[in-house]
Image (spheres, each protein chain N blue to C red):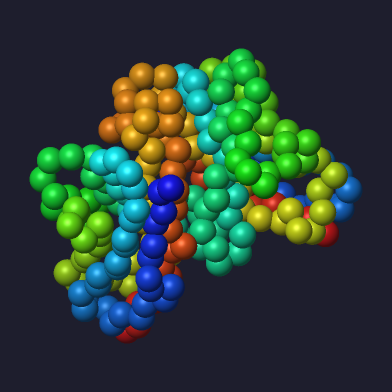
Length: 118
Length: 116
């Protein structure tokens, strides 16, 4: 089946630094990837939709200058948390949509990244 | 606007007992419905999904869910839980518009605790 590799699994960074999270589709082309965020003991909230070769579309309330998304190829999307602060500590997870196939079998989730900002 | 409600934040069940997790949704069109499970610190694993057809859907790990349009519900069930079923369970609605496939709205989740 389609596999999305997400790295790193966990990261600790100092306040004010930037962190990059990668999502890579291993055996398929992902024209679209979605980025979600999950606060402790809460549900997953969609942050943005990333389309290969174009600008990401951010959900209301998500700071696009803080959460930079790049989807430069059909197999890689990155989320960079810039000038991270403790309130950015969260679980970030991506999902990828297959280029073909439709809703019945066209997407899969990465394993997530636990970000802790100290 | 679409929404997903999981009324039960936390459920405790004895090992071997049956389990039912509730999910209600609000969606303008025919919904694509999913149940995912998340173990602590882990990603999401798809248990089952419903797009159309038979309203009783079988999934992995012995789970099943029933779509009831009249009640806008998609409840998850398992006849006999195992200790390994302790996890967080999320119900989700997937967008049905072509350009939004793969875009999910998740419920708040239900934490399942399994006691000996």
